[in-house]
Length: 206
Image 1 (cartoon, rainbow, N blue to C red):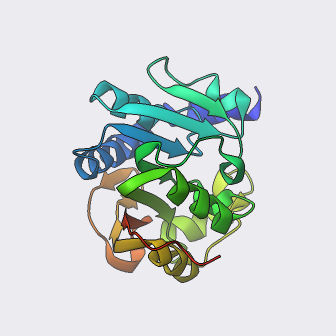
Image 2 (tube, rainbow, N blue to C red):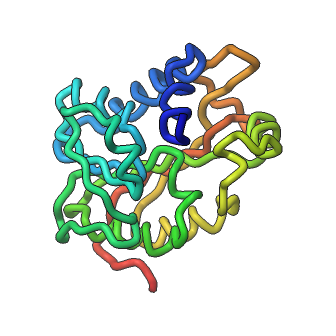
Image 3 (cartoon, helix red, strand yellow):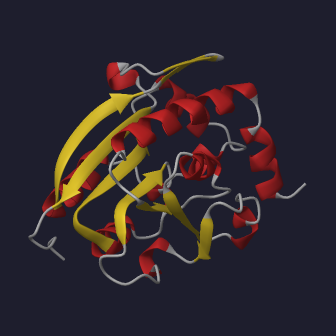
């Protein structure tokens, strides 16, 4: 079984299905009023398929052609690096990144591209892994976990760059205790740190 097949198989486990359900509900709530949504680093587009079922017009972008083979037909897919996304300016009402930005080669350039493709007052929602959480510390020590391959853990640096082009709101979200998942903030031990932003008129610093 190849890497993508193993990942998709793990996504079918009850724990991760519950995580996806909670993340989907969160995104759907904060995307209200948007129509065209770009998901950057979408992988097999499980959550994106759920958004499409709720009426959003979703485009999923990922560097892995193999991962996108598992995406539902309701999601328009594009194979490309986030740093080289092939969309013109003002293409989307919202851009989301579900636990993918921290794995990219050049997250700063990826954020610049995300802002570029957003329409005026467009929204960005970044779901980031919280390196202070017990969940992160355990998984990052496991060589079989995708979390062990993370490249960027400085959340303050990421937030500062986002704030150059967006009005931002941040929060901790989601708890995983063993096999129990809850949509609680969890403070510093939450699994996710979320940055939500609204595009400002001023361009981000290069």
